[in-house]
Length: 271
Image (cartoon, rainbow, N blue to C red; front, side, top):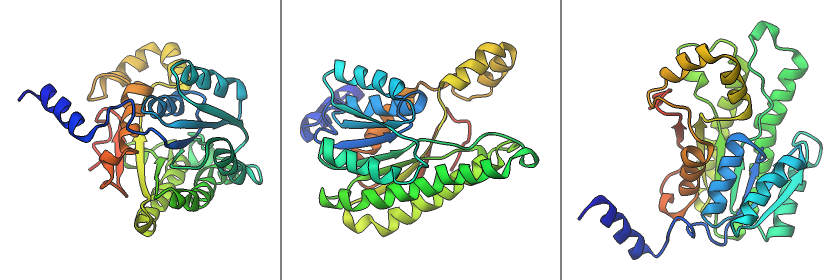
């Protein structure tokens, strides 16, 4: 049997396709208005999930929501600064009120800047940890009982391979924020498994407005950078990040939890 035939056979046996593997599920994506967050939101919607898109700018969120709706999906938007008091509670409450619950939580929003340690302002340091592990923890904790009501769920936290690269210059605080999130993920995977909830980290690398701007304005450096990626290209937010995340959130990945998965074209070689 060919690989393609085997794939179709397996799909027929289990009665699911990519388009319906997340049917009936509700997903929250923070930072869902552009870049990797947009790709993840589109990938989840493509697999049948209803989306709550969270971010600071309603215009960006509504643009992504319209793409989802135009393809027959369901999407709601919530414009909020995640570090403000009551924001995590408002996010979970909105998902429950407008979409009926929470099955999938994707913590993508980030507030840490790449700067040398000696140049990092103290107030930005505090803000980075507020918008990173503190908000991630709050959303995880608040989503947990809602997921348990629905038989469990999946938490996807976005981290970085910068902490394990050979050159961590300028990424000390950013990496520290993400490593704290990695620790929370591992603990949740262990503590909440009995409730049917899984927790995973992904370390993605894909096109974003910021990266695209840098590549356009630094073409020689960009060519050198791309040539250093084993895959030979920068990832696509939907096909290289969003669709793999949709699979990770599906029942097909139900035995996978607590891991950190690099989606970066082989850059980190993270074992």
